[in-house]
Image 1: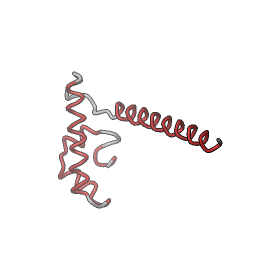
Image 2: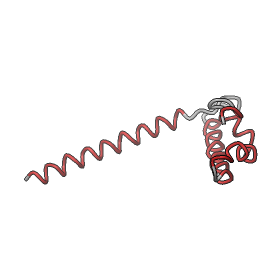
Image 3: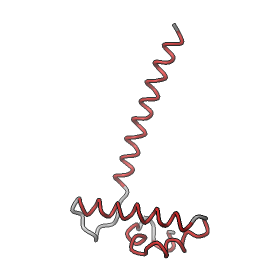
Image 4: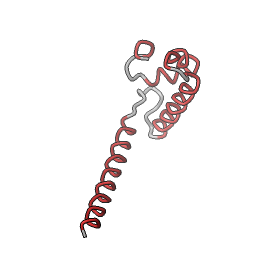
Length: 93
């Protein structure tokens, strides 16, 4: 994909559309389904950035998604850790 669109050039992927993306990722299998999903995510990302007033000339960024995943992983790890502490305490009695 980097050869076709450039590194992390998500707007170019979105503007290229599903057919171009499908041709680009065909060698990985399930290209039609994957390209439809990827374009759908990029459309939602574009809409999100427009709603934040960043306009359509801005590079599409996945930074907010990385933060969301990091927070979610942190919360999940904390819950797992709490469970382990409670479970270990229960077994020790």
